[in-house]
Image 1 (cartoon, one colour):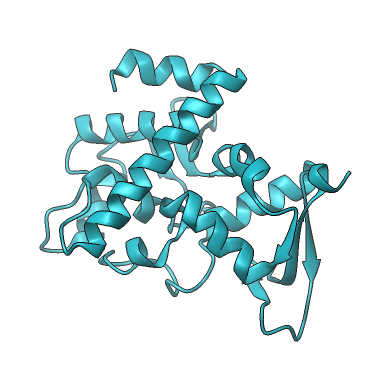
Image 2 (tube, rainbow, N blue to C red):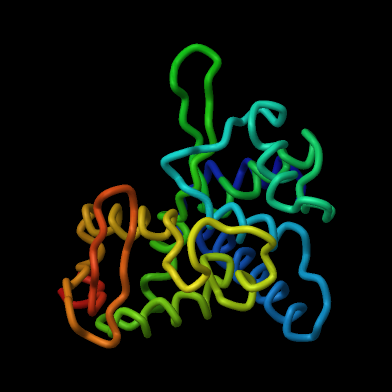
Length: 219
């Protein structure tokens, strides 16, 4: 996909552009998962996006390659070849992440800008295909079947280094779920003892939920 087309999709909020965005993201994740199952290396972009979406959104990446991202990818992959390895690839990665609804850019004044892992838009687009009410663990499995880069175990299993356990809901996904709840799109039903409960951990605001309800579908 050309740079100009990526930027056009990112700016376009029409239903048609959202469908294109979601289809591209699904195909990307499906290709990565299929490659792993076949014992082949997944595409670099799918691997890089999955790793990025395992990072802490409260510690965002600088948009400048040499101001943090370079060290993060090199540290993550150690002696292996990282899927993003130079400034040009980082710029392309940022465009992909934003155009696919997986990240937002934040400006902190002056020349300080950061890329925050935030898949709110990507999740919001697929809510219409999710069950309106489902046990929490099943809800996230269904989400991963649609968008594997959000934490599918197959992709997470080949990452060299992630924050926390691969069995946990990634913090950027937790951020997105909370934002969608505040937007009135979801209801996250608390649970302390359900075997189907899922822990949503972000900063000091840990929550344990037993069900996820899509409110617009229940209205």
